[in-house]
Image (tube, rainbow, N blue to C red):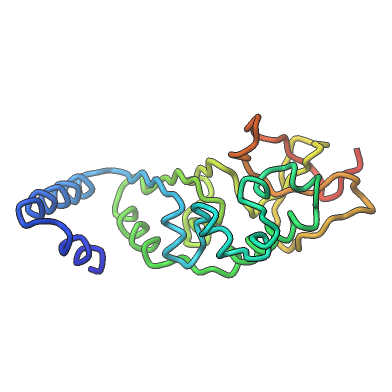
Length: 208
């Protein structure tokens, strides 16, 4: 209702009638569909209270300590940050992981599930988000494709094995005794010069 009233105030009457027609057409298409494809980006998490990091102002507002050091998102959100300053990189990703773990998905997730539950083939999610909110909201792992990976999985930056493991129960610390490299979150680094999937580790401690 809020979104509808917000748009209504900003769209002229003649345009509003056309706008409403499109909404009704979309509703009819959904009613007749046998499955629901959900594509979601940062905006889906913002309504749950998560920062979107759009531009340095938004990023530094969420992480003022990095603003003080003049470190932007591209500098901290890449694997080189773990090699250059592991404690700082883990501070950033550890905070995000803790934030994502405690965040409750907003009611929009439930609305999408309700719509999909009436369809023969349910829903499939394609998302650029790494927060795991769709899983927490009850969507099946098998029905979610996370384009940029997830902060809830770990990998080895060396790499020592082609596997990932769950971050459940793991606090983000550097294990200098067992691994001279760095345990890294499982992500596709968008800002890496050679952006690619980094092979994953099999075990919690790297011994190879």
